Image 1 (cartoon, rainbow, N blue to C red):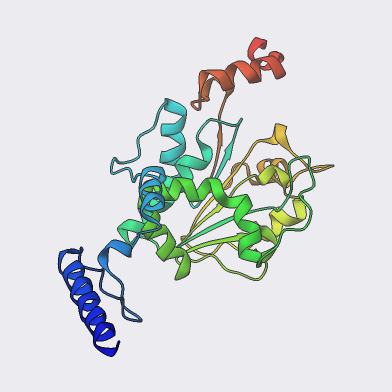
Image 2 (tube, rainbow, N blue to C red):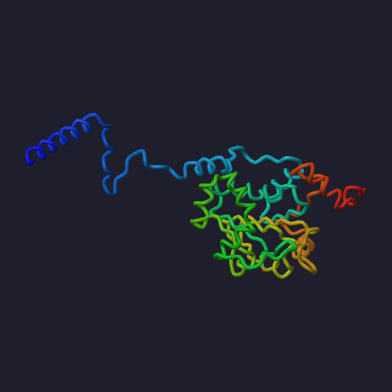
Length: 272
């Protein structure tokens, strides 16, 4: 009985060995902490492609005026310490000012760009915005960042923001500062400043600095007199100050914008 049992065991063992010889080799067991190349997946590959496609491309072309009004405005900014740009939306006030600031920073003529505007909401209450003051104010200054990205490149803009070469801050934070010759300052949406705020801002101007104030008096979102209109009356005729008026015919954003303004303010286009 014992001989038969041992014979059966030997026969079964030979059968298993023969099956193992002709079976497919098993996958080697993975060691802890190591991965095969087949299991490595680049999760953000698609997102990286989207970021490259959606990123603002830098324009290597020098700033060129699209009409005589912009040409006069650009010349005024280059030749004067303080320039006021007044006119409707879409005339290129902000774009020309930001592009000239980027040009001056890149060429080394200045060391810092300051972007500011009153933190006034256009007819709606946004409520509490989370984050730091810089993160909250970023909502108000995004348009300028797009322009700077186009003129300098997004990487350069991010670097300059981190190192204080480009500063965006609410108008209230300008109190106590002095704008020197190494600074290019842009105050946008100035029609939403009060006369007191405008006086505070104007008295920050130091020697040989470059300051641009933009706005549209017709689009003021505050009650009572605004600082832009008040400054226009008080600064008229001063040396080193230039007040430039854009007309509705100078709108370059699109023909649709002209048509929209014509519907909202027909008396402007129909006036002699």
